[in-house]
Image (tube, rainbow, N blue to C red; front, side, top):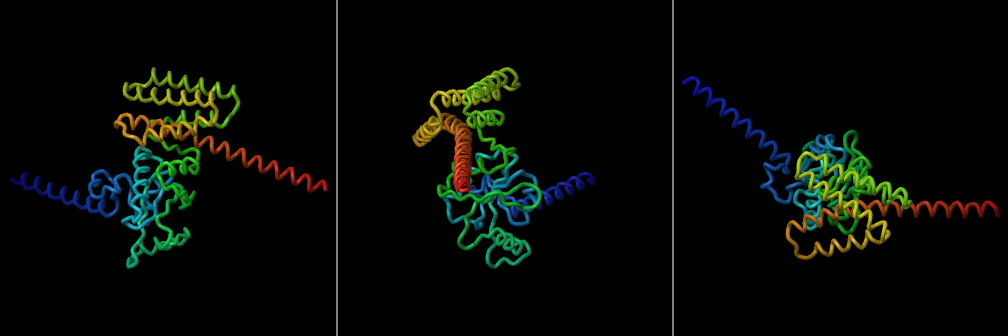
Length: 308
């Protein structure tokens, strides 16, 4: 009898603890899978107050934040942000979050600190939201960049991240392989045929390595499949020149706009993710070339002026 009572008591205590934990989660972490049914619009986006933002961001190398009211008015924009969060759901380096603006009548410490933080960011809570900001990871809160593309779609946000994130942080999108992303980046940045030949050989070697050394058959198949895409894109880029990246990107996007089976859609989207690595590297190379040309022209004009 005493054992039975003890068992019931322990069961009641366990239930109380579980309820307390769930209450805390409901209050602070709307995104977690156990609570996914609570709000489908935040399935992959972590909702944060100022207090939670300070605590949680320290566990990530970067934090992408949508600053907006608790219930976003721009639903189309938020759905694109949610799509990006879904694409990055397996990325342990980047936190994708919705920073909740306090209501006008909120006067607790968290709300007041939040208003001071928003003011420090030079945001007008009446006119600016929603705003997407990229912050550094652990340490003092430091804004790396502000997303200002008028397109406001997931593709534009991915491009923004590729350019603005520190080089050590990879997006790790579905179908992409970090080591091959680096090879692709180097391949696009150089125009030397010998260097490109070495990089393409390295890509083929890695594809062979994946086929031989990956212990799980499913992983091996996916890795080899992705590696083939990287190699094929490098070969086509070398044959057709830089214009191939733009034309192939447009071709894949046109196909994705049509009706496709789920399997084909996933395959095409993964190809597009890989192609975006080449595209962002090409833009960085182009921008660097333009910047160097401007410097040379300025030096030339300066030299003429000094001679006069």
